[in-house]
Amino acid sequence: MPPTTTIFAGNPGGGKSTLLNAVVGEKLFKAGCSDDLGGVTTTFRSEVHDGQIFCDTPGLDDAQRRRKAAKEITNAIRSSHGPTKLIFVLKITSGRLPAVEVLTLKLVLDALTSQEVPIGTNFGII
Image: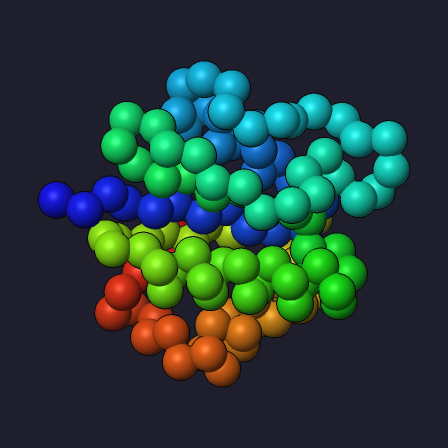
């Protein structure tokens, strides 16, 4: 059976790398507090753990990062030979998704659909 690819995406400081490390049960990705608002992860990274592929993305806080990360996410999904999970890590404020979180979610999904990646066919969104 081909490996599952799991990709975590979201804005900086949301805990993507920390959650990935918790899911795999060891520290594969650098996580912690950053000195600036850009986050700890600055490039798209993938690691294999127990035959599965896990991907960490930089925070998508500005338009340039969003476009680059959306392209890398699209490429990762297209190159996957097995199921792919795209997990958005979002911060809820006062019971609501802030506009910046909705914008990030929309831009990544728009990038996937504009690249004709069939949502719900080759991957699921959690």
